[in-house]
Amino acid sequence: MLRRIELKVLATVDRGDTISELAAKLDHSESYLSRAVAGLVEKGLVYTERDGRRKRVVPSDARSVERYQDLVRQYSHIDFPELLTGKALEVLYYLDQPRTVSEIANRSDNYRNTVNRVLKRFRDRGLVGTVDGHYEFNADFDRLHEFARELTHHLHRQRLKAVVPKGTTLWEDYDEFLAQTETEIDAEAFHETGLARFAAYDIQFLLTDHRYYVYSEDLEAVSPAELCCHTLLIDDGSRYRSYCLLLLSHVDVDEDDLRTQAAKYDLGDEIDASLRYLETHSEVDDAQLPEWSDFQQLAADYEVRLA
Image 1 (cartoon, rainbow, N blue to C red):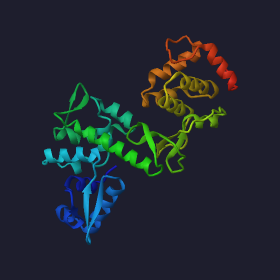
Image 2: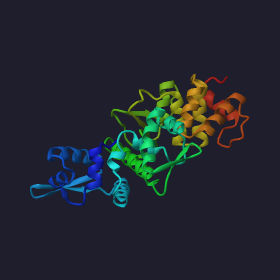
Image 3: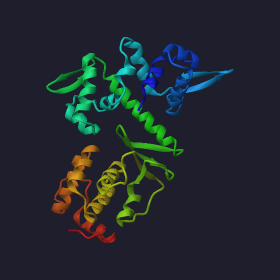
Image 4: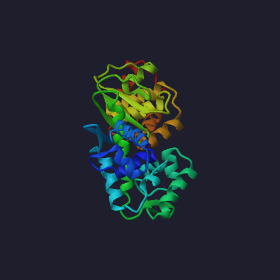
């Protein structure tokens, strides 16, 4: 997410530092610092101002920058640029509450050994501790999680802003996010989802002016299980619940994959209720799910055969 040199620049830069001044502070060449600053400018974490022939570097007003610089000032004896390299920020992102190594590994899709190594670095410096096998922050170092969360949110917004003039993030985790836009996105790692994606499974809806995309560098195509979850994230009302039920009735969705995706998006209860609804023909106490007769009519309208 951020290289060590970028973290060092953010930790060091005062408003109005020149590239040469930063190079002197950090004992690096000006060309190396220029590349690091360019990376931070691209990420929207600093910007530059011309002062004659010199270029001054100014921290942006992003909350992640403020969080990080506050930590650096308060705990100047801690080498945060060294601590926060590699997988550290990803692990910290998922330490939003006391969690075991396995829980963090599952949520971040990392090996347990990787998570263990990161947490050991923080434990050795007294920043985290364990209670009954669950890691949690000591003192007020939970601000490290806040920094990881704010930085992730900021970078996701930058990625979205780079491809559309207006967009809203509806859901996010460390390396993925779901966005609503008013225009089409044709960019790498952005995958169309929501009601427009149902056409890929021969269910055609009248679409609104909004478009929906999931950003993921690892995803090749939105699966039916993911589409069902994305639809509920977009709108958890009765109508969109019914659309998900249509999809689950029409397409052979792997139930284990569906539950895995539901856990990822914190939609376990909603997906469980939907599966029970289809299995029992609506014998589920959930006001957001339709009457069976209404759902039968909807299925007939869209030529979806029910079991």
